[in-house]
Image (tube, rainbow, N blue to C red; front, side, top):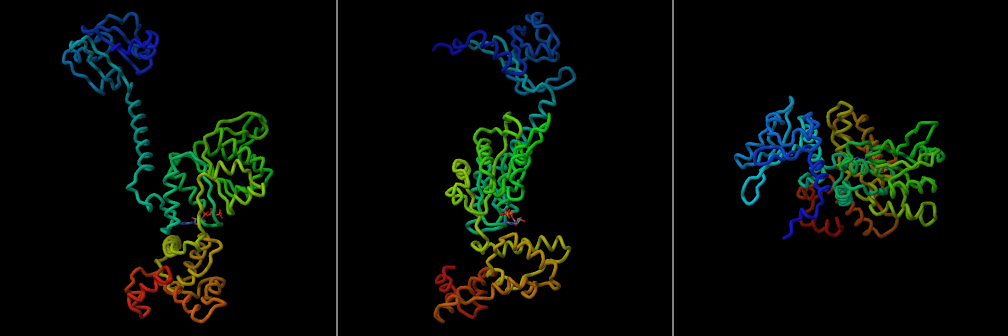
Length: 445
Ligand SMILES: Nc1ncnc2c1ncn2[C@@H]1O[C@H](COP(=O)(O)OP(=O)(O)OP(=O)(O)O)[C@@H](O)[C@H]1O
């Protein structure tokens, strides 16, 4: 077979030898230098023409190239003390027809700092890989702040784990206080951008005429006043209430996502940017697209990954875990002993419809942790509107049998929320375990 080296012209070969390794030297069978690259000569402070033909040990302090040929054994990453420092060369014997005809040496790490840099780079890369790929990490470890084990929250956590390492834009929809920002922060934390800034902007709280400058910056005389997108360069920008973004600015955002450039106000110059975009909306964007209040092209660009964060009332099974987490947190903050929650309080909280979602729950728990004077939180310290709303078990219409059936389902559901042990529940309700199972099945619980 024709040797592949014939595919390379002498110019190409020379360029490779000059640049492929940091430093490079070739010796013949007598350990005389036949090739050395310019960079190596610069380090050695020698003239290339003058060293060709010299014994390698005369030119390179502490060189062991001649030993490689004597023993026919390669030296891989063997520390070499030279000019007051350690470099890390490879020395490889060259065989032709089974005979050693010379050797070449290449230096990948020129001094200890080079190794250290690479070492810390390798460590960081490994950390990142572990962060993103470590499947042994369970959901609780990956999402220490995003509480909930309902199917909906599990699915969201799964999706976040998959999409976090990408640069794809993400749309997060959900009611106020449902946890959209928390999801956005989790995406950032689990991405390889985690060490870079996570910057937020709430389009509903900034006057429309200032939004463009806030987002993309502005040339002011000779200086560029950076916008939040630039402050998040390398990281993530979280744009809340995207529906409030005027159509003209939506066009600029689309350009940024598509082309990776932004155009600050008062200039035609386009600035490259590497910021991941996550947007949120409290109401479905599809409706706004239909009424032309939201650009269709931007919508299609951001909706390919959409996280739907369900309202708390639709994942009420997460309530006990959330309540316990908030109680622990606020008891620590208030410097008081952990307190328990009376069963009736659970019932009341479970029957409330939570228009303010997890934020409302969190605020209520914070208040009651401060208000409770005993070791148990009882119903009387709950806000009045909550007690009133939740006290209505019955339906306004239906037969007595239907109403009783409904109440039966509610009662069992509430017991199941706070007690895992079915024997205990059956005991407390004064029914057999099998009857309890029948009723659980009947009410689809
Ligand atoms: N699943 C959750 N686990 C723990 N805390 C949560 C959860 N969801 C929301 N919270 C807490 O509730 C509060 C509101 O959450 P967040 O700001 O993420 O909601 P949001 O949907 O972005 O709200 P808004 O639409 O009002 O901006 C925060 O303090 C957050 O920490």
